[in-house]
Image (cartoon, rainbow, N blue to C red; front, top):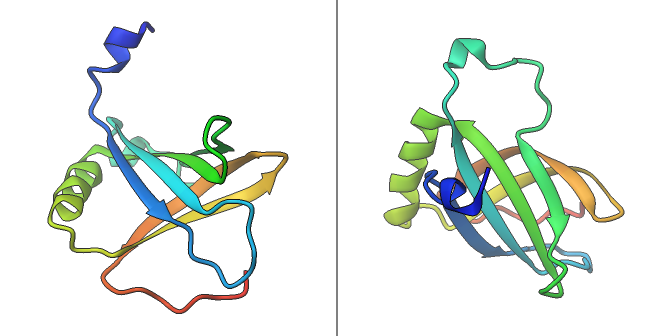
Length: 118
């Protein structure tokens, strides 16, 4: 797939700060959310990862994430982000080791939640 054809896909990029009580090597996150055009009855229910996670090699302290979500949820998510209805985005990162991991879920919250120790 060439760069021009990839640019024709819908996508949503969310930038944020990582909140944590403990010291972390990453302070910022960039999440690329992409729609998957598969009917919900054909999605593998045992799927553990919806995307990947890796460090940005050009920007120190940045973590990059991708997440593929069902198309209908993606377009609803776009409306919610545009309205700025959710001050908190939670990205569930699994098995971050040696700069690679997977994204197991994303969720939006209407209020900031209390920070945990993990």
